[in-house]
Length: 173
Image (cartoon, rainbow, N blue to C red; front, side):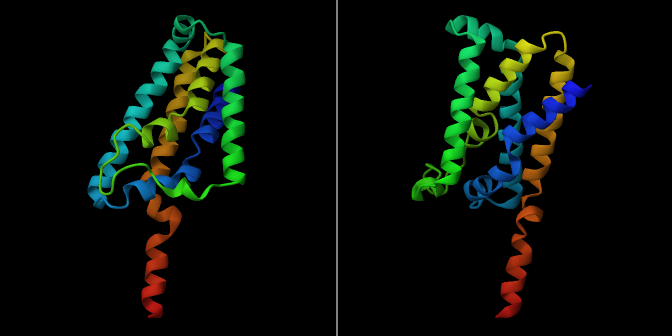
């Protein structure tokens, strides 16, 4: 049970729903609220399918690519380090999404790499390798972390306080 709790916290921290919230909002800001919710749910379901694929077939994917788990572990650490460096020293072009104006995202950049990024996929493969007889606990941990991420992203207006800020600026004028 403690492995499930620690795996849930680990996966939730790597998914980083609060850190991804501004990116999701900027990518989806041009969509109507109903369509935004549908796109968000679609992208999260795609991310969940990819994460489950890597959780169950990660070892076989590694074997097919002729990689060892240590290699993936080191690579995941390097990727987390690079993400941390980008957070400390952001570049001016990080706000651009790479999508043409008004286009709806599909798979990239929301499902992959924001939610199901390389660090998370590497972590899922390593967890499945480390705890092969506790797959039900790992699936439960993944579903809990994914569910919390979905709830946070769906309630983005509450977390950013956009409506409260708009109301205050409108009241001030």
